[in-house]
Amino acid sequence: MSKTFDVAVIGAGPGGYIAAIRAAQLGLNTACIDAWSNEAGGPAPGGTCTNVGCIPSKALLQSSENFEHARLHFADHGIATGEVTMDVAKMVARKVGVVKQNNDGILYLFKKNKVTFFHGMGSFVAAKDGGYELKAGDETLFAKQVIIATGSAARELPGAPFDEERIISNDGALRLKAVPRKLGVIGSGVVGLELGSVWRRLGAEVTILEALPAFLGAADEAVAKEAAKAFKKQGLAIELGVKIDAVKKDKKGVKVSYTDAKGGAQQLDVDVLIVSIGRLPYTAGLNGQAVGLMMGERGDVLVDAQCKTNLPGVWAIGDVVRGPMLAHKAEEEGVAVAERIAGQHGHVDFNLVPWVIYTSPEIAWVGKTEQQLKAAGVAYRAGQFPFMANGRARALGDTTGFVKMLADAKTDEILGVHIIGPYASELIAEAGVAMAFKASSEDIARICHAHPSLSESTKEAALAVDKRSLNF
Ligand code: FAD
Ligand code: NAI
Image (tube, rainbow, N blue to C red):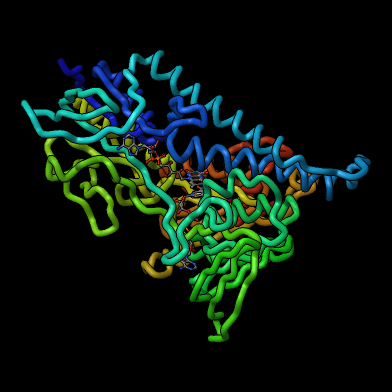
């Protein structure tokens, strides 16, 4: 006899595992099915984020940043190190350890919350008795409600399939055995910038080829400009407006033929090529057709604003549906759907989903960019404060960048905050909280911020909206 559940979640990435935990907290008998295996064949819940995304990339970003600091900046503090070397195998082994801690943490949380975990592929068998019969590995189960959280996979460049050795996705880029002498990256999006930075810091000569004519088009233009300047100074070569014509691989490396922005034919020879041109929703093996699940043109599961699919009792969340492909967006949708299933009123505010790029300088923003406000004809006031004028940033030895705040010209409500500089990833939380409470720039300007702290720059940017910065 098949096991029966109130809710079955397919996929244990940040969307799925959080949805399962929240559903169980709300008293629903919950199963979570995930196919990801570690090298030993055991379960590795956490999805792309934990295994080949957010967590391992941040582990390598930290290691490579420590290396760069030791090599280039410790001397400024009077610390003599002698020659600094990097043991790539050890760095990667540390990353594997960090990933495992997170995998084990999720298995522990499933136990603690009484979520029944199945390791294996989950797929639809049939709609039955007001619910769904599913396969979970070799087992069959029945669930009244199903949450699809099957995530996404890296998009391949036509004619250049991933071999994860010479032409690599995020997966291969997180487990290179040695630092390539020359590294090519196609796509100057988030993966290209973060992982390009990791290997540049370790000594690779990195060239990024980007199709669009503008750099970091989703960011505020002032931030994108500052970022381009900083990356160039670090030696990250970024070529915009290119068209990739062909990618050829041989035993020695990869040859990329492309047309540059001026229409000239160019060739880039590299040892290894990262292809980071976006991700596609992943539903292979789900067998949605067995129950008539409606899909979009990108291969995404079609959902409404509530994450409901066309099928009664079937929901979908995270990277497999519309919206930004971010772990925290997936998590928020997971919580909201679990609460809706339990009869509550789950809610996600897409305007308040923060973006963070963990390069150095870090880049983070929430809300609208200046160009979006202009395009929408919204009257706004802008305030900006440079980290150069912040005491804590000077003490840190990291004064690149600024905080920029945009507020409604009439009501003074904060409409967007854009940060480039040290710990932008942490500083952006204050902006999110303020905007969730519909704060004005005046509210932030009147809140006591600790001195000396980087967060004083946010307060100063708020003061600058009213042209009354105190320290600049
Ligand atoms: P996923 O994390 O992709 O999880 C889906 C899970 O479902 C996987 O475990 C998969 O094996 C499983 N699965 C799929 N089909 C089935 C099936 N039929 N049966 C059983 N299991 C199945 N986002 C951030 O917010 N911050 C970051 O810093 C960040 N860094 C990133 C770095 C990199 C290099 C990459 C590639 C991505 C990064 N992201 C980051 C994006 C983030 O990883 C994704 O947005 C997030 O993982 C999406 O979560 P999800 O739960 O929707 O799907
Ligand atoms: P991306 O969408 O961020 O960037 C892809 C880039 O490739 C774009 O700039 C695009 O114009 C360019 N491109 C597309 N086709 C091209 C072509 N044929 N030739 C040259 N350039 C081309 O995608 P990326 O970097 O692969 O990351 C995937 C997703 O993962 C991100 O969108 C993001 O949602 C998530 N992510 C989030 C991170 C974070 O939050 N810190 C870190 C890494 C990934």
